[in-house]
Length: 266
Image (cartoon, rainbow, N blue to C red; front, side, top):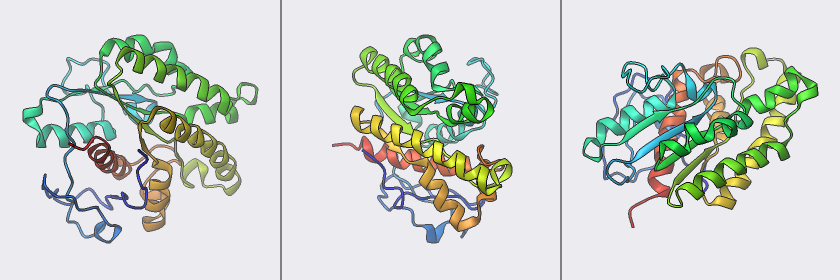
């Protein structure tokens, strides 16, 4: 399932609104309510009791999680993974969900592949969420001799998906597109255009993999494009690559909406 990106733009203009909880609501969030300080209604996803949710990726997922699951002050960091865990943990206490963040700053998909057994397979997740690609793109700009091609990106990405689904054929998988905006270090038009071109190529790969493996697919680049059109890119991402708190909220809200619809109760 691919989320309709225009239907699910639920960007928080400022993280000051009260969340309106309504587990029976099927209302989709419209951009018209984004800046009214009202929070939003959402449909809660359905999970088997005790489900383990694992978030994988790079610095956008990492956000300084403490590398120690027993340290409950820091075990999730402060990315969209933390926001998802906070909302679902609060609203679905009887489901007893477990949340794990294993994003590592600077990682490329090849780095995920190298640590996949320990940081994914051995953790036995019931749901696996992956956001990766910005460092694969960045490598070519930092070191032109070490370009990560879309084919290489796809090959390693496909490897980790195959390994994950072999270990757990019932695994729920959510793939998120890499994204950038024209702000911060990417404010320059030439810098932005060249990097956006390469980022979009990786997004095409993610779309292909989501279709091949029938995963949920959150098209985050288009979500951020729409949010930037509403508020300006600097209100979403501070340096062109890393989201501000409201950018993480944008991901979190739409991730929950996507998961609720993709695995709706029959």
